[in-house]
Amino acid sequence: MMRFLGLCIALSLVPSLPASAQGVNPQLRSCSTAKDIPYCKVQRGQFSHDWTKAHRGDYASQRNVAFCLRFGCDGAVKVNKVAACAWRIVIIGSDAPWERGDVMNYKADCAGIGQRGDAMAHILFKKIYRRPLEIVAEEVATSLTREHPKQPDR
Image 1: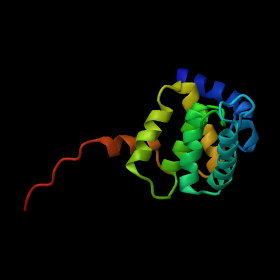
Image 2 (image 1 turned 180 degrees about the vertical axis):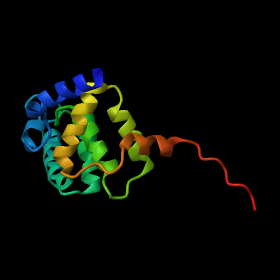
Image 3 (image 1 turned 90 degrees about the vertical axis):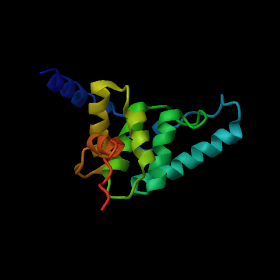
Image 4 (image 1 turned 135 degrees about the vertical axis):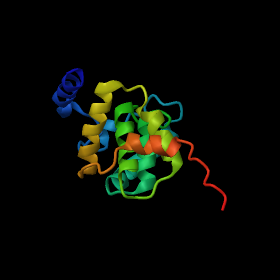
């Protein structure tokens, strides 16, 4: 019942979800107060470029977008842990090849956002990816981090 209630709350927040189809501008911060204004402007430009490519399915750009949404890219991007988690789900959930580091990043970026945040991340994932999630990212993360037993010598 609590899980259902949490999902209902998350669904009621869908119109206010950031980092979805709204475009890149709501994700950017002003560089006017940055310590290094020219560098901040470069970071904003790079994020905008990566944002466009990430929405087209570019793996490296998806990683960069997730990173910036998690850490802010030196103040050029608004930190949004839920959106960072959603992009990590996109990376693991896509049919593109990904690395073990992506699993660690998924775990780090999606940890601590709570049930509501997790529900919002999955809703945001659907808006970004526009296809059903064919695998469960948590299952992939769990299966890849388990120690696999050694095969017997022949």
